[in-house]
Image 1 (tube, rainbow, N blue to C red):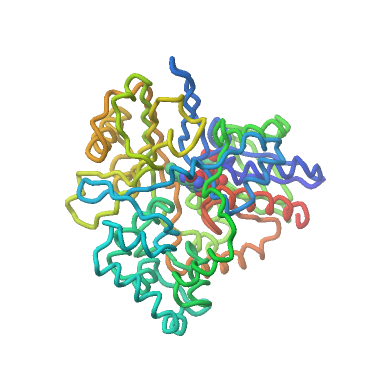
Image 2 (spheres, rainbow, N blue to C red):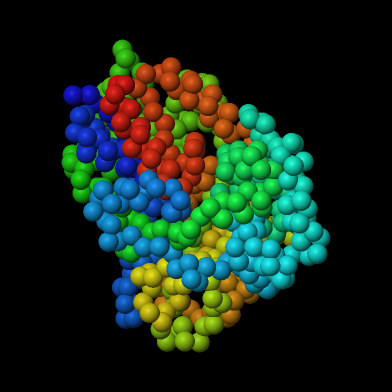
Length: 472
Ligand SMILES: Cc1cc2nc3c(=O)[nH]c(=O)nc-3n(C[C@H](O)[C@H](O)[C@H](O)COP(=O)(O)OP(=O)(O)OC[C@H]3O[C@@H](n4cnc5c(N)ncnc54)[C@H](O)[C@@H]3O)c2cc1C
């Protein structure tokens, strides 16, 4: 039997291991540096007098549009656990000058599908409204000047061409920072918004393209999907199907060598040989591991990653009676480019978890998840939990209502967790993959390549497992 190693037990690596176990055509070992599988996917289940809080420490859902996480959940027998976001409550706010202003109904990212909600929204100035109308009217000229195949630009530049400066700053900035933890001036539009690039090429106007799409659609499904008991359930289910001898927790791989067509891994003072390896570590680790093998591969992996800090605050039924939280999924904070923010870290976003999903908080309680990202997360990474909780509470109180000492609080730090898909990313990854293909039996998966979302992790992990068996 072929021997395959998987390095890194985040969702992508665990999905790869699960696929190998399911297919039963290879022997494999999954090396994970920490004491648990799941990586950034982690759920804390906290019992209180009011009942159980399901607190996501990292991701809280996957986008419904991409099928691969749902398919896996069904294969794992978790169909009855699958739940949709509470889209009847779907409203997200932008925090501006201390006030929460709702993003108008019917927006797809920064693109409106209903004129009326744009006209009435206090989020936009008359200038922004005019920019929206012009985008629709200038469809043909936008189509003619559309981004050519193989050409890339920043998200900011793309959105500015369509909707001007205000929409770029007020909406595109916070929305993209919320997903990619990144800066729209640097993020690649081809990598992070390929659907919009395609719409521009076909229709010029994004508004016109979405209007056509909507007319063709009968009913749109809920935007987010998750699992009642938390996303970690997915990992736990996969883990039970893995032979225990194949899972090596607290085994950090620190060297990879190529010897006589075999891959030799070094972890915890032991060396083992494999026919193929699936490297599912974050890109800064993958770069270190592969540097000695291929300098150019390591060079293509030189990408910046940003960090995130999650602070969850849960309030008892009694406390929650006095808390008036606006109705909706949460709010986003436009990234500020001013130097005033240095030494005055702001939140990136907050989710009103009890409203966004059923089954996450006992009835009548409030559960908030606050996020620090970008430069704030970097600056705060070394701070103690108590200071982070106090700061998150203060920021939330400025935007919402004064908050009492929470009944439950939790802090998770995710250093260098979100690789930045900078302008040129798609081409860079194509070239990286050309090089990887020259090294028989090497497979790279994870959030540095073709998407950061959970469905992409599942798809990549499973595909890499199938390829590793075929090509090793
Ligand atoms: C705060 C936050 C919120 C997010 N929210 C969402 C969301 O709601 N929806 C969504 O779809 N996506 C979300 N994402 C993105 C998504 O969670 C990640 O992209 C995804 O989980 C990454 O999976 P992975 O397998 O690539 O890597 P990771 O989860 O980073 O796993 C890598 C693993 O490799 C291990 N490792 C590292 N070095 C070694 C070594 N030398 N040897 C062995 N093992 C090693 C690590 O311990 C880790 O377990 C979020 C990300 C963050 C940070």
